[in-house]
Image (cartoon, rainbow, N blue to C red; front, side, top):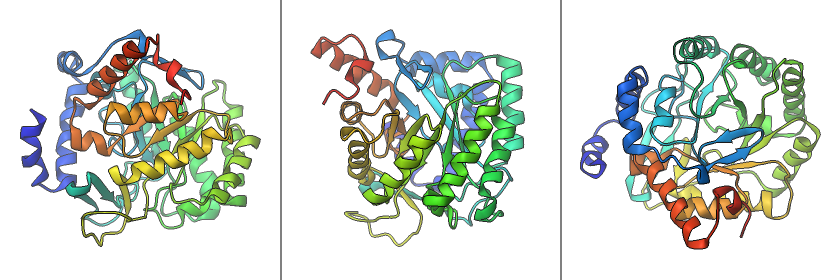
Length: 358
């Protein structure tokens, strides 16, 4: 079905299509009958797929990456679509419109996207109110919810710790885990927060906030694929000293190497071209035991073989964004069925047994 619809969708503006799909998913999330039908078509329920990671239980290791549901409009729909967890955002303390349009571009020949959205979102207070209402009406969510936090563009880097803390203050009651995003290429100067003293100041502030809360929750850090190994080592030194529960590797890349498409658009590149670098960074983090906390791998995942490769390389979980756009709503089902088939072929009992088994 999706193969028939996709050519029509791909002839339209990418952001306009995204907004219409999000509207439909938001509507579905408010109607239990629609969610039940979507789940029957898309979700795979099997205890062998369950993964335990940083104190949370995930029904399966396939997650939705941040960027698709920036304002937490369709939260109930992601579990119905078969995801084992969903990450909303990036959310900033201040509402902001993002960068000028057009700002989202497809590269079909490369199965890739370029985006320079610029953290367009309604702001932490509005997202918190939406999540509070969701909880009031429907109770607990069926899958863990992550909230990805970015820095407000209007605030200087010197105020970054306070900006992230403001978002955490609004959103802490509603997320199962939180991600400090300092690696998007689309907010001027943001990636400078990955460096030395700035990152240490930010992690100290966030760690202090988290420690003071009555309910402990994991805080993760999302890093860029364009870092040098020395820069990654510097980040890991800080991660060892502050209460960071996990890493997400990686964000989008500013690189354009190996593309078949002729492009001049700025922004972060995601999809197939990112896969090799995302896997390389994952292996660097895990194979040398440089990091002893869980890693969520994201970037260029389209097939069950891609997921298996990331899990065997040491990822505890994976996330999708661009693959979901190109492969359609049944992709989580295909990936989870592929994992189950592999377990049966290998005589293994659960997906958790695959992690780090090269």
